[in-house]
Image (cartoon, rainbow, N blue to C red; front, top):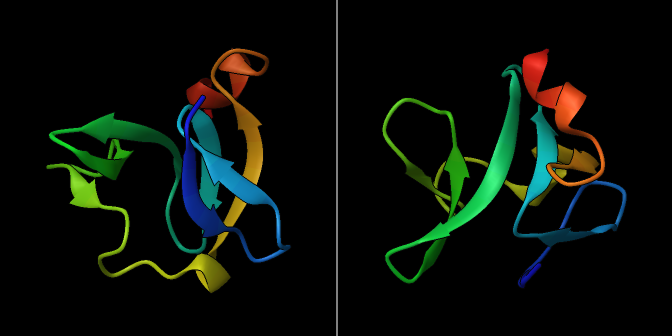
Length: 72
């Protein structure tokens, strides 16, 4: 998993494949596409640095160890 260079609201590093809870939204997966990290499952892909700040998100698991979180 590749590090995004960002941390969540608790200071935890955000990696590709992490499942992130974003305030006011459902859980999202951090993905890498077209040379940029993106939130997956937000309609059209949303660049990770656009509209959502690190203060608004929290890493709650990852797709490899916690796939059940994708069903929430």
